[in-house]
Structure formats: structure tokens, C-alpha cells
Length: 297
Image (tube, rainbow, N blue to C red; front, side, top):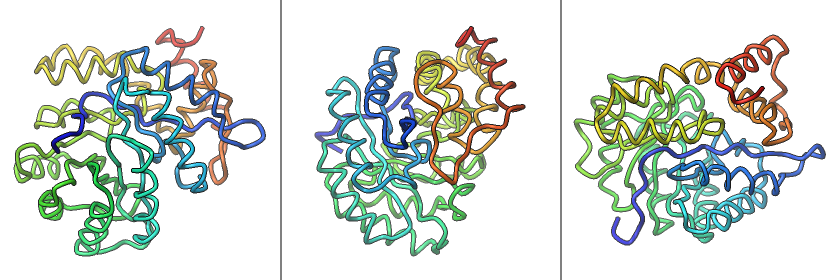
């Protein structure tokens, strides 16, 4: 869209740190944002699934987006989450989030109620028509129980401010079909750290990353190399980080990545139910990998 910053490269799906009392830890969140920017991340994504958006109140959700936008202060773009399973509420949330000044919205497919492809089309059409900033679709069937198919994405791409998709289906065949069918300029963004190289080789323009919470500089470099067509060099980073990518999903994300960040001294290790702390045996595996990568001593 004209007048909006192009978002590409590596964006971090920010965790939401909580205090021991269960509130949003605003100081820790500010420090995370500043650290990410200092390490060369390309954009930031607050209030996604990695940010435990499903357990945030509306006031907390808006406060987090506002804080990230203000802390980033224009140094990097912000793509703010605004999704859910009730279209009317998502429209209301999207309007409120857009009013806080992010560069784009990221909106997940409605979960639990499993809409048809026509229902998905009408849902996203309503969200996009409620705001004037770019909307990025988010397809993650493993979490939502519904798959946004390529032909539906093509229909949605005709809506002027639906400008891209975060693809986390894990289905490379589907993503290949999508890459062939969408119009030029429609932006495919990987939603899986481990699949970034194949998705970007198909024409993807970047990644919304979990592992960049822990290693922003390396993941930003991996995406930069892919954008330059230097896939062999990108694979050297992939080999280094593949173990951590896997361990970040040894239990439900964001449990492991928040545990890792706590080990690194970035946040307190607090979750909101129904998420619970990492099992001790998995914590040991994660710590060993962090030591191997010299992220903790």
C-alpha cells in the first residue's frame, strides 16, 4: 500500500512478560523491545500467539501495542496482532489497535468455530474494511483447526489493504501453490522458523519468528541472506540454530521460549493459565542448548 512502510526481513513474535503478581511487566517489555532493535531486528510483532494474546484483556492488549509502538519510536515497523473467533469483536479490536499507530495488523484465522472458506473470506473482509492500514492474514491450522486455502487468499488479496500472509501451515506444497497464485506484491511471510529458507526461496519476503526472541541478530541475518539469494550462507545459520528452533516447541509455545528468556535474564518466567512452566527434563535440554550456543553460561 502506498504511504505505508514495507515490512520484510525478520520480525520477532514478542513474548509478553508478566510480573510475579501476574500483571504485564511493562519494564521488561520495554527492555525486550530495545534489545531487539539494538540487535538489528527488522520489525516487531506484539500480541500474537507467542505473546499469549488469548489470555490478555482488551485493555492489556491495547496497552502492550501502545507501549511497543512508542518504544520502537519509528526505528522499526510494528505489526500488531488483532485476531479472534468473534468477527464483531475482532473488528472492534482491530479499529482500536490501528488507532495506536502500528504499521500493520496481523490477524489470525478464527479458531474453535472452524468457519468455511466463505466464512473466512467474509471475516477478513470485515476486518480489512474496518481499518485503513495493511492487514496481514495469519494461517496456522495447528492452533486454529482451520486452514486458509490458497484460492481464498487470492480472493482476499483483491481487497486493497490485505497485503500479505503469515504462513504457518507447515505445508510446503500449499505454500508453493500460494506463491504461484497470488498477485505480484502480495507478501508471503514464513510463520515457522525452520521453514523460512524454503518459503523465502519460493518468493517469501521474511519471517515472523519465535527464536528471534532469543537470537534476533542471527535470525535477522538469516533473512537478509535469503533476500539476497545467499541460501547456502543462510543454511549455516539454520544449522547452528535448528536445535533451538526445535526445542522452542518441545512443549506448547511460548512456554519454552519464555523459559529460555528467563534463563538469559531477560524476563521473569511467568505464564497465565492454562499455560504452565516447562517440565524439568525439558528445561534441562533447553538450558544445555542455550549453553551450547553461548546464550547462557
